[in-house]
Length: 467
Image (cartoon, rainbow, N blue to C red; front, side):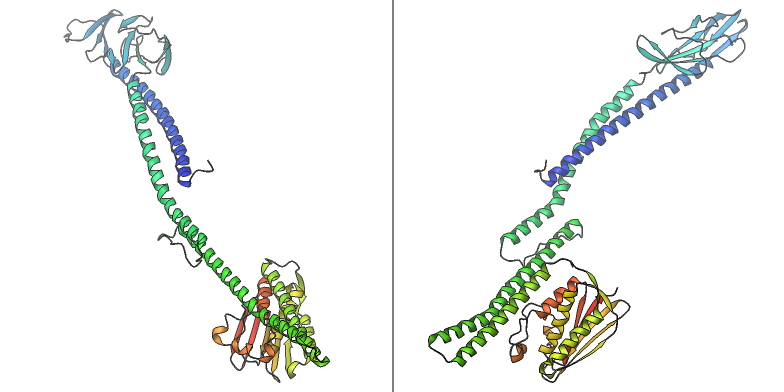
């Protein structure tokens, strides 16, 4: 069963259900028809007996009475009973018999010998294994009180009708079932056809090298459309991930090539011939500097990879962001890099929930980035405040600014503007600082807004959730 195709499963399940429904319907039809027919048999019995009872009259003498052709006259109680010619001994399966007060048969044919004691209600009576309905009524009129008119009918009197209903049901219901099952198969095939197209398209994309291909979506916006759209979104994310990984590989190769080449060149130069102590010292300084850059880059890459693989924060504490930011700004002021002025406006006792070590890395990276892109004697302004919904950390500089078309790329790994690459103060940057900032912000449910103007500086705002 598990290996069957969906349309086959749907058809099989539908077939079982429709056959079960038909069987139940047949049982209901049979029960209702049987009850209706038996009710009709009893109503017929009562109606025929009521009609016949009106055709019986008593006469004390027949002298002077005009005898009608077809009427029957029976001697009874010093007089005569007239049985009109409209009286029917047998009608619609009902046999009528007239008895006197002693139970003697006066008129008609006694079929089963049913008792006459029970009056004015239909009752069941079995004779030779067959069930009959019996109805006894006392005629109304002078000198008729001692008489009993009995009607008898076989319960299967209308069996032909029931047989016809059963036969028609057994003929029609299977035909309906067959039509429904064929219709279900055709419909399920039409339903599954778009799914097959999605499968074929997905296999083509999976087997091929072009992840830019997409599944052709149906016109109707139903579940099949949603399935195809979900696959397309998944392929779009995969394509983006592969492109990012490909770009990452190319970038890291490019970034590591320079320090590795420099280290090899300095090593070969130092080994070519004997050098002076100062020359060896200069070569070792270059090697150390490039090795330090590689070490920082590898550490930044490992940190960023761990952040990007982490789905949620492991250590969440209530952080006094005001106090943490003041400490970081104080340490930066002491360093006095490039005579850059660091000013701050930090509101007191502002708290957020998060990982304090990560938040410290985020702040340091933002401030370091501001220092790195700010020329000598420039200024950096750090502020912290809160609104009704957010805690806002702002780092603003008077640096070189960012080109408008590059604003969306600044958080990409290893991205640096060309003018930044040509800046001697930036040539040892790993290009991973802002990527790390973005990853940490995402883990904390924060978002970052960047405003920049070339030649005037940039401002980074991080919006944390207020607690």
